[in-house]
Image 1 (cartoon, helix red, strand yellow):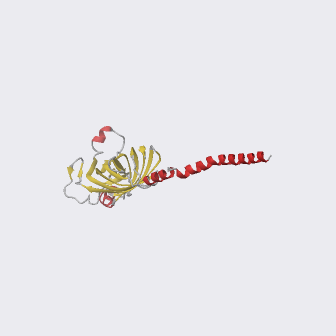
Image 2 (cartoon, rainbow, N blue to C red):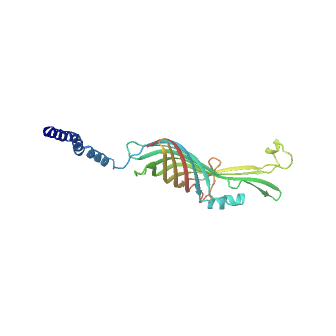
Image 3 (cartoon, rainbow, N blue to C red):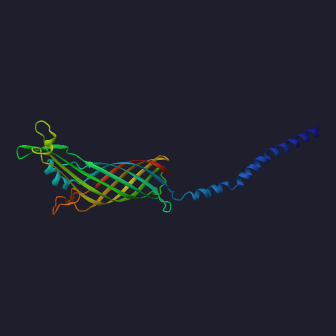
Length: 274
């Protein structure tokens, strides 16, 4: 009986030892593995600045605030009798791609145009008898090369992108005057007295565009991106002419009339953004 008891105790000790050996082995393997060291090395390599790639295109809408002091004093007031509000709604588009050999650097092309017709039409009395209808517009447009740098910040899908646009465009001022009809309409009278004169002129000047801008971009998914931009639209104006290149002679009426001012825009783009 004692022998059986001792054998039972010995067997129990052996079984307990065998049951504990795998746990001890597993614990020992966890302590000796190099898995954690490898992960730490991987995390160290990932701490560098991120690299961005994007290619896409889309539509732009902007609010442009020009300086209309010269335009109002020399054109709007004497021609239509009121000042224009300093606002032009502009619309355009842009396409771009990240250059692979310059990290986070992006090039593209864009175009914008907008027209201000703030006054509408008015009637003006000439020679105390006849009345004429007058119409005046200010228009600006350009095409430009865009150069952007995506800041290497770890901000997820949100990116800050300073850049500059360099391009070429024009400012056009269109003025039209037409005598109001009197009596029954007759097509012949539109081209003969007493309803003449009909007069219209377009005054134009080309400019070189330089536009520093700060862009805030958000891509909710990899193929869609939205942008908010604040910029200064600077223009270096050329010579003013009218009606497609006719000289204006010596005049100061166009001093201060340009395409410069603050610009705020929204954009929506499709492409590949990562």
